Amino acid sequence: MAPAASAAANDFPSGYQGYHTYAEVTAELQKAVANHPDIAKLSSVGKSYEGRNLNLLTIGSGTGKPEVLFTCNQHAREHLTTEMCLHIVQRFTDGYATDSKIKNMVDTHTIYVVPNVNPDGSEYDISGGRFHNWRKTRKPVPGSTAIGTDPNRNWDYQWGCCDGSSTNPSAQDYRGTAPFSEPETRALADFINAHQVKAHIDFHTYSELVLWPFGYTTSPTATGMTAAEAKRFQDLGKAMAATNGYTPEQSSKLYITDGDINDWSWGTHKILSFCFEMYPTGSNPGFYPKDTQIVPQTTRNDPAVDLLIGQV
Ligand code: LU0
Ligand code: ZN
Image (cartoon, rainbow, N blue to C red; front, side, top):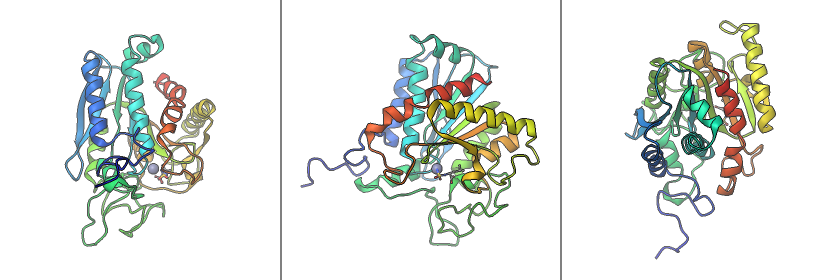
């Protein structure tokens, strides 16, 4: 008989059970809608490779308002980010009736939240009651024995341009056979293409950074990024970082990436698109902070989220 404290096959291990599995996230989203049907709606932007819904929670009432998007869990093992999106959902729904600042933001915006961009990967990462240190999607790479593409190298803006991703299917930053080769990135891009998103944060872990485009070049300006636009990113990035204590910098200062969601969002749609690398700063605890960190590390970003929403 298994020891009583052991995790179920697809649950988080002991010390991590405050994290939400994909099924638990879905149940929380359904609960948010049941409790707040006037301002919350659950739909999906499409399906993952393994057929899971890519849940989309829309918060707001009415149309024609500035649209803001929050995305989480492109990278499978970055479970704290899923909690960040869930926290945003809960704060903007549960807080609506009692917090006038929340009410005002919801009344004047449409807020989209996608808590699991890569649910196949995050479910795989916790399978068997232990962590697998998985990053990528779960679609087999055609013509290879390798599984998975880095979704954050799979976006169709300067894809594969600049040595910021790999052509090796076994690499952690494998860019895929083509832009949007992954059903998850394709679906999310189609959703963004069909809407009028003005501002966006894609949450990752870890390093405690606020990052802005472009990632493909170390130059602050480039085609599609004027000096004035670069300054807006810098000013807002620094202002948000002043609220959460993260380090603000252009994405390429961390390292060069090509085909990431932020370059695509700005380069294609002029969306004010940031990457937040959440807690911790270093490899201990790295991608796997205990669940006691969920509340402090998600609430830590409330003022930055509000600042971004206030921009549009
Ligand atoms: O995709 C990544 O490599 C990110 C950083 C970029 C968004 C600049 N870092 S992560 O994979 O460690 N979350
Ligand atoms: Zn990441």
